[in-house]
Image 1 (cartoon, helix red, strand yellow):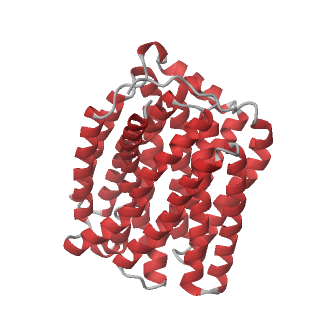
Image 2: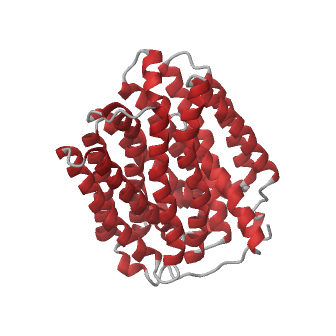
Length: 408
C-alpha cells in the first residue's frame, strides 16, 4: 500500500467512524434547549443520548456477524440509509419519547459505519500495524468530537435544535456517497463465515471464552464509559454550573478533544519503542490518577473551572492513548472473525457507555456526579487490566505480525 493509498484509506474510514461521534455529540449544546422545548427534565433528555448508545451497541452485534458473512459494503450502505431516515425523524419529533425512540434507530444505523470501519482495518492489518493505523484513523475521527459541539453551537445561532438533526441528514447523504464510491470490498468470498444463527452464536461463545479478549473488551468499555460520562454531563456542568454559554461550551469541549487527538498521534511514535499492552497500562495509570484528582477538585471546589478543565484534559489525553491499544490487542487475537470480534467490542463499549451517560444525571448532573462516574470507569478499567488481562503475559500472543494488504 503506497502512502497515498494509505492516506485515502484513513480519510474514507475516518469519515465512516465519524458518523457515530457526530450523531452523539453535535446536539450536546442543545440539550438545555430541548429540556425547555419539551418541558421535561435533564435526566429525560440525557436518555436520548442513552438511546443512541443502545442502538450503537445492538446494531454492532447484528451487523458485525452479518458483515463477516456477506461482506462489508452492503451492510454499510443499508445502515447508512437507516441513519438518514432516523435523522429526518429526529428533526420532526413531536415529543421527547419519540425523539428517544428515533435516537435508538439512529444509533442502529450509525453502528454499521463504526463496526465495518474497524473490521476493514483488521481485514488489512494486525498487531502494531493495526494500532498505528488506528491511531492515524483516530486523528481523522478526532475531528468529529472537536467539531461536533462547536458545529452544533454555531448552528444554534441560526436555527433551533431540530436544525442540528437536519445537518446530520446532509452528513448521512455524504456518507452514503463515500460508502458507495470510496470503499471497495475488503473481505473476499473465500474468507467469509458460512452458516446461520447457530455458527454465529458459537463464534460469540468462543470469543467470550477467551479471558484476555473479554478483559480487553471490558477495559475498552470502561474507558469509553469515562468518555460518555464526560459527553453526557459536560454541557450541564460547564453551562449550568460554571455559566458558559453555548459557544463557549463548544470551544471548551473541542479544546479537551484536542488533547485526546494529540495523544492518539503520540501513540504512533510510542508504538515504535513499546508494545501496545505496555502503553495501555501506562495510559490507564495516568488516566485513573487524573480522574481521582478531578473528583477531589469537584468535591472541594479547589481551583474552580480551570482545575476542572485541566483535570479533564489529562483524563482525555490518557484515554486517547488507551483507545487505540485496547482494541488493537483484543482484535489481533481474532483476525479470523474481525467483524464479529469488532462488533462485540463496540457493543460492550457503547453498552457500558449507555449506562454511564444517564448515571451522571441520576447523581445530580453536577461536577461531582460527572467526576464520580469518570473516576469509577477508569479505576475499574485499570483493575480489570491488571487482574483479568494481565498484560505482561500477552507479549507472545500479540507479537506484531503484518498481514497481506488488499489492493485498494
